[in-house]
Image (cartoon, rainbow, N blue to C red; front, side, top):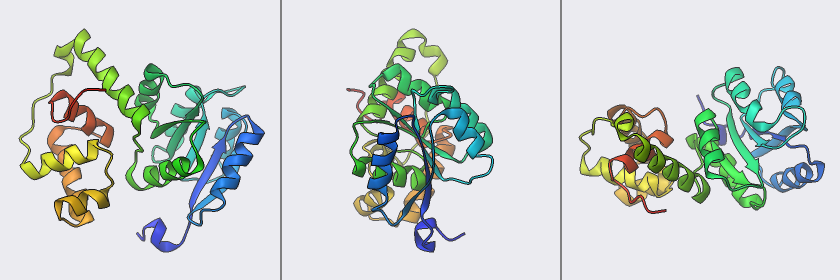
Length: 228
């Protein structure tokens, strides 16, 4: 399969938000990006789910607070329809418990609605290419939640420690430091494809299903600093 960015086909985005002006602003900003195409807009979750029955998208920008059906209720329904569809949650609130809940429900990133257009573009691009877009909001929420769970019941979180090579440990630390695959490849002097292979091997070794799981593993086993 030819990668989307090499085939010339843009990433198809749907904006779901009940504020017309916000949708218009984001759509206008993204229209300047040749590799992004906003193909539809929805003003509530029910409207969006009906759209997804006939429209194929790659990434959804989903507002948390909407009438009729909000983003929290809509997110799991989107993942039932298409588990591979990337969903970026939008909100005005920086709420650690909410962020963790949404990531556990399948969100691929979480942005405040004050984020500028370049951040939104970067999140779309990164989620499409690498499944998740981590930023200071998501990292702090995941680490904070992990600490609370560990304190409440560490026995439930015990996971056998994998034997990682120095190279694997370095790559895991760089992933936790929000480095892209290309940046990691440059730092460790490997090809991006080799880095991706090591990342997949890390998931198998640690029993993690996703990049978020790898970061959780790194914190639990003190591979990275837990300070927020």
